[in-house]
Image 1: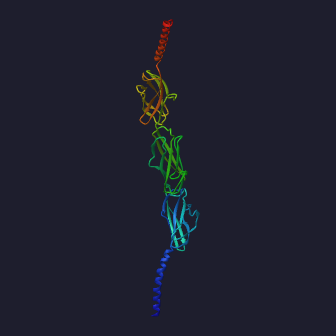
Image 2 (image 1 turned 135 degrees about the vertical axis):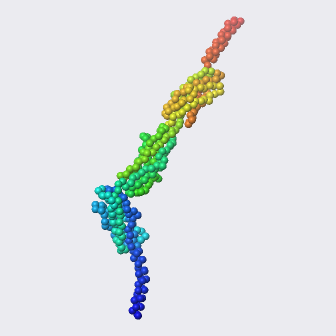
Image 3 (image 1 turned 90 degrees about the vertical axis):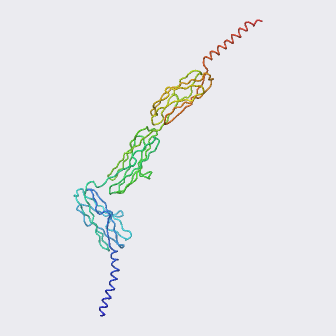
Length: 383
């Protein structure tokens, strides 16, 4: 009876002890895992698996690649080192990378590599499957939602592009951009002012900004801008376009740029003028007008110039007829050239000279006066 009680008591005491130690043993377990245990890869390429070693209690865990196809290389890396093990903590599982180099002659089908983690908490096996396939390394792309921008030649154009790395590897890209001769074109990572390279992780994207500054005298038209990102044996390009609508400016002057003329009251004087297109777009239907003094008349030949290309001039003749009663002196007439997009004006200073007829009349009067005086002296001088 006493023996039975002792046995029963021992059994009862052993049950709580088992319940206490079983969870502790489970907590000390080890697991090596990866989010992507099966991937496709090209023959002759390499692939990297991100591994995580989980342990129920702090402990040293040995790592090893126990199975691999013949001729394949597999390397465990962590913290920049080639490693054989890690120290695992429950709250901070260490990260490990397994690099697998696939031979160029690897046969088609699925191949298996096994990683084993071994520690005081036990052993964990992680089988990884690699399927040999063609053209699975991915590619890179340069995309722009708005590949064409429009504006005047004095505008600075900014394109926002997206650089997509569709490969499994991180790539450092060299950025290049080019435009027409004389244009300032620059490509850089978004948010960076000096950098000319962009590093993009596998499967991620990064922003690229292209800034285009055309010459102020660039003529209207569409201009191509080429952008390229290259690195890691990959290359992506994008074709952008800047459409210059042109700027509009003109000058109205004389051929020698002297804005003065001599005119005679009562008579017409022809004054040559030139209209110079100082802008980068053609000027259409340029009309001429004037604001002369009262009773003066100004006409133009032609009254309208149909078109003036950028950088060229059009010749116009202004015919100015002062009033017949205009006295000698200086007068100002405002001349104006206007198109739909822009207008310019010039003040022409005119010096009025009296007509030669009045000079003849004056000389005649003076002569008549002298003759009259002489006659008076001859007739009455002796008395």
